[in-house]
Length: 119
Image 1 (tube, one colour):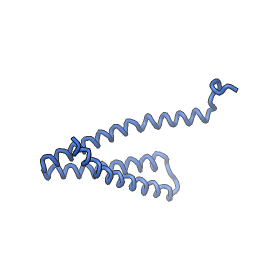
Image 2: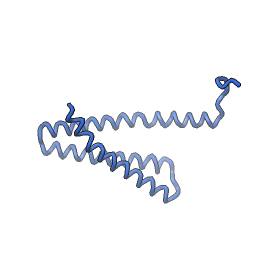
Image 3: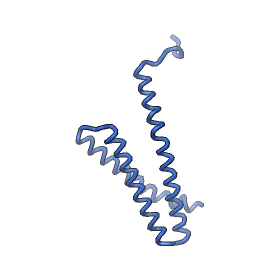
Image 4: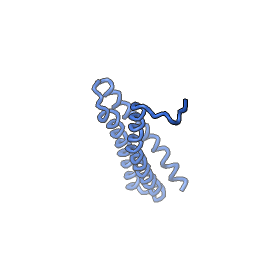
């Protein structure tokens, strides 16, 4: 049997289309977030370079708001878009989004200054 000539069944096409749509929907968001991370890194670089308290405040406020944005985005993707009906799954998605958001905030807080120090 020649595998190359076989047509995928409908469910395989639907899965592939859903995968393609997911990639097309979320890849621009990744690069948007990388842009925000670069800007926050610039704030940190300037704050360390100038030792200005106002820029440090701007850096930490931006970092905190970016962490909240990540949390809300993940919660939106997990809970609202999937329309979870079960209250335990809904609470689980909220907790997971909060853990990821806080974890990313702490990760960025440690990584961005190191990247800024390299420049």
